[in-house]
Length: 334
Image (tube, rainbow, N blue to C red; front, top):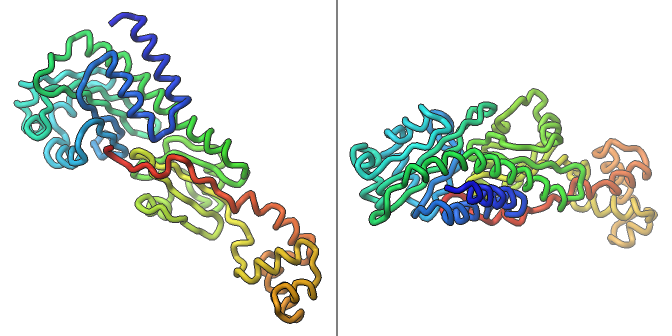
């Protein structure tokens, strides 16, 4: 491959890292890679060294692919070869695929006749990123030049993917005015791959002894949900994005301890209405308003209207988390 071909590809990779939404990045990058290195299908993801999957994106493959691989191919000869040679692209042709009992299942079931596979390690998180490119029957063998080209490109694919996570966090921050909200990227096992500094600070409000890199168990349990996870100090939400999750964490507002009626009374009183005006607006007795206000002050740990006004003025910092535009995207295969 010519140097200018590689250079143009790398420029496009890092442009994609800045510009593509997280849900579109892997498909967009693989579409671009096919222009210089033709292939029919691919599998891109992350796992532990024991091959426990943390994220998985099958490209131009049916949804059953990962289940078949997990059942028949986990620990196969190709996986063993790339684990033994991180950073080196390994080529398995049709004969090598057929001779491996597990890989033979991929050949028969999905017509995968050959593979180029590369693995890079993230020693900080004890995870690996892998990318396998596949060709079906009737296609020429991957050449030695194509193998070397993929080997050169793979570290940049990994770096661009990481940069895309950072860009996603930055985008979420730009669209969220709250200083009380922080974002992170986590995988399907709850391991953090990138986070804003404030994210850890908010976690430690609720879990003072938290060290990471995994989310607390209460948050990991929400990875298959989508509903807010409400705790005493924080509220979390996890949005699935292409086999990963965008984790949103915000400080819990003191106002959330109030009942709906108490909140309405607090809003009226905080903006300057008198007991009688609040009572008239809600059609209740002034004495009832006073009783509610005593409960409101107790719950908010304040003693006067000044404290109430201050809390109301700052509630937008905690009450308006932003839903990322990619949150509707499914995990796994397209």
